[in-house]
Length: 458
Ligand code: HEC
Ligand code: HEC
Ligand code: HEC
Ligand code: HEC
Ligand code: HEC
Image (cartoon, rainbow, N blue to C red):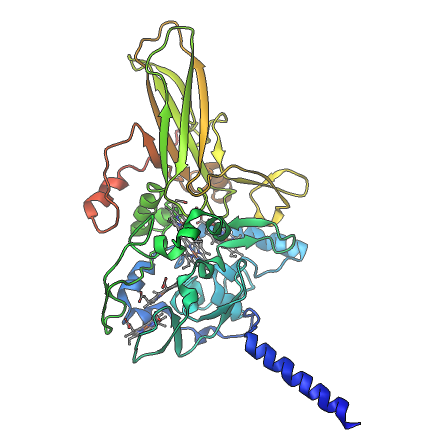
């Protein structure tokens, strides 16, 4: 009679052992912590002033305060309540501390503590002990004395450190940089997967190499100190986390990050143009433009791209400066000419209609983005007018905009914000105003002059 009890005890013990052994922990849940278990970033800044200065003003530091995110979140809140969707879905990536300390919902942020409002911040990122996979933020947190990182030889009087190779892997970023629909599992954004399937993954060039070092298109050493009280190091990882956001950074006055975003965009693509320089009247002129993604370790554009716009503007003039052909121009309302190809993802709702509301997405209507080291060729043609004079000249510009002007006007009211148009690449190539790497103020100032801010005529 005793043995079944003993057997079940042994089995239970074995199971418990197995669970401990495999280290299977569930992702941190709302209510697992209180926000006062996390330190505000200003505390870390006492010894990690450089990391703080780099992170401060980044889209990670503004992940919750981002007004564009907030407006979309409020729309989601209404839909979530009506359809019974998870109220904390968005916030898990945009204010992770707010979620695990059950300060969200309400989605209006009225319960958020100061540390939760810091978005994706120091102590959150350095308390991730483990991840349960890729996408939708499956982090396992252990806030407290131990700050996790990737250096096996650190010593700090202020906190313990623990080295975890994971911090130097793209999978770390992949926790949040792959986004799946909370109900139907549709892929809404997959920067991690785009990278994983690219030549960069094979070459061992991870997210950190391009986004946490001065090198934009690969690893670049950054000698210095990781802590003011620590030793000199051959390389210290940087924390700018810059990508392509020159809109929200501009409006929020984060000018250092805005300038870097422009520089990132200007390292991502190259144009090659095949066009005749003279032709006879009445003849058809063919222009081919090849766009190559030379610098991004993922597609361009990447992330949730239903709102992002990348497109080519092509102008052909005759020798007298008369315009023979023009495609990809903006109209007076800031709308892109309907003849141009816009590179991004278009989602469809349950009725098959295009939607920019992520939570309504049920399928992908189209996705024409350009893969890492991949290219596309655009073909344009027109007929040479009788009165045109040779030679003819061709100009091509690859533009990027964070969101359609229309969508921003709808969210915030007409005239509230001008979404800047960034020139990613031009043909013929403009004089090089930049050298790779940061720190050359002159180059950065010169670059900022190249932003094309389209004033809208009322
Ligand atoms: C009193 C000074 C001090 C404060 C405050 C401090 N640290 Fe540190 N920290 C250090 C020193 C010193 C090192 C070791 C640097 C080295 O070895 O190069 C270090 C190392 C680290 C590392 C590197 C670990 C690794 O393996 O790469 C991380 C991550 C870290 N700190 C995070 C934090 C965070 C997050 C905060 C705020 C919650 C913080 N620190 C506050 C002094 C401090
Ligand atoms: C998005 C998550 C994230 C945020 C936010 C973040 N870090 Fe880090 N940090 C990392 C990762 C990942 C590494 C390791 C990079 C590697 O080894 O490839 C790192 C490395 C470090 C290091 C060691 C640098 C070195 O090379 O020795 C320190 C110190 C540090 N972080 C402190 C901070 C402080 C202070 C803040 C806030 C101002 C902060 N981190 C914000 C993810 C983050
Ligand atoms: C907790 C989730 C989370 C983790 C982990 C995370 N990110 Fe992010 N990241 C975000 C969110 C949310 C945003 C967008 C905030 C916004 O635009 O409102 C973002 C934005 C960015 C941007 C875009 C900035 C721009 O200018 O467009 C870059 C680049 C970036 N992250 C890189 C990284 C890298 C590299 C890592 C890994 C070291 C990482 N992130 C880890 C959540 C995360
Ligand atoms: C070879 C360098 C390189 C690698 C590797 C790389 N990136 Fe990027 N990333 C760029 C460049 C250049 C841009 C700017 C052009 C663009 O938007 O794609 C960028 C842009 C971004 C953006 C901004 C997108 C937007 O529209 O706001 C995010 C987010 C981002 N990267 C995250 C990541 C993550 C996460 C990884 C790893 C899975 C990664 N990157 C790997 C170079 C790289
Ligand atoms: C799994 C993590 C994750 C979830 C969940 C998530 N986001 Fe994000 N969000 C990001 C990252 C990473 C970026 C920046 C890179 C990019 O453009 O995709 C971002 C960018 C955005 C942007 C663009 C901000 C800008 O300044 O350009 C908006 C708006 C946004 N998210 C709204 C939402 C809303 C609303 C939800 C919920 C329906 C949501 N997000 C859910 C990770 C997430």
